[in-house]
Length: 247
Image (tube, rainbow, N blue to C red; front, side, top):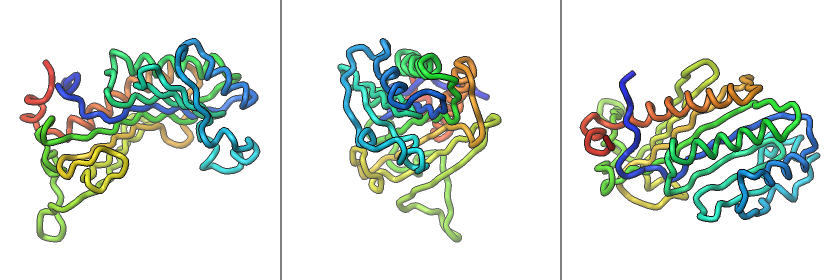
């Protein structure tokens, strides 16, 4: 595999997040309290989320609610969000991106340390690493999804309309990457730009895959980050990469 650039000169990242779903033998309310009061999040403000008002008996019976977070912690600069529930913890780095080696990776490792050290008989049942990117004409010379390394035919003609493309690829054992390439004008919840490309890359563990200690989880994160980078930079032409990336 070719050496990947460290980053773009101008980040395209709207949000980066890592989510840990876990099982344990502790009392749900105590688990939430321990994770929220960790010294790693000193100075973060605390906000109750809608799921906090939901009885745990209802949550455990509904797969769609079981991993919903109950509280959100927000860093003083609003750059990092930590969301915690009885069986889930996630770290979100909203724009501006802190960088993998200069903030985001450290925050993620702090969170996974808390999950293993502050719960009883913890077992990670899913990890997801996700990057949401918006590539624009002004910052990245991407005027549409077909300025990416992407070719699509519809019938006998090359397709050139609005696009929402999903791609799934299995990587290492227990790891899948799901990439979405979307025309920005059909994406809700992002700064609107009629030109450019929205790229959402989600790397996650498969069903039945378990991680039982910090070293295994950290090793998975490092590997997932490399997979995410490879997936992203494969969408850019070599010329585009040379123009847009730092030395």
